[in-house]
Image 1 (cartoon, rainbow, N blue to C red):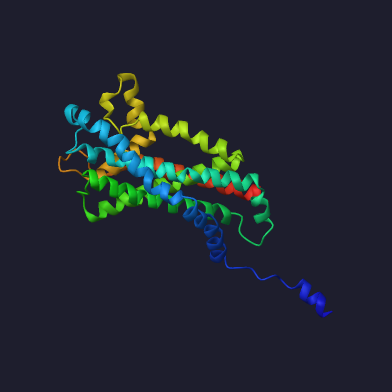
Image 2 (tube, rainbow, N blue to C red):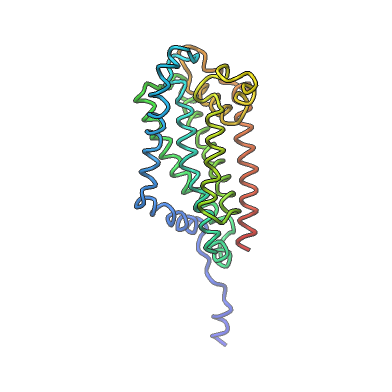
Length: 273
């Protein structure tokens, strides 16, 4: 009788936060050994050298509207660095789906969204490291914050929002793909096309007339406009911090967060079940 009572007793459930922490450490600790965090530091440095060095002289001759090309380029360095680092979320998600870990996690007494939360947290850690490295690289070439303290916080918060939305989108792609290599490679082309055909490197007026509308209104350009306005510039040409400038980028960011987040949670629940 006593044995039956013991067998029928409810198994103790580990606290949700502790489960999330254990799953996050599973992804963060290897990054310290396999060079992922080192890549998160080096990527912004390489982006800075690859963009700033060859384009600075040309842009200083033809103009870019801001006090320096470093001030103009910095938001694009942030976008490229954060996007490059959080794209590894697709690799992690595809690996978990391929190895059947989502099904195993689904058989454990934990919330179905916890593995997703852990993967996104690990991706955000890499994204924040990349953001810090990008800011250091930008400071070296002459970038400065000219806005208020609140606008500087807004710059950092908006960059983290972008990283979170991109992490959820990359995780969703990886969960659906189940092929780590295919999931990672499929992100390279859109990132390359949207990066080149954006106003992050050159003003919209430098594009052909038939491409200017797309270059001006696509999401990467809108994110860049918001970051430039929040960073400020002595020339006064960075854009006013207000709804006309920040509204469209926030709509893109929050909309992506809601769509990718909802779809990622739904896929995670279905796969774990």
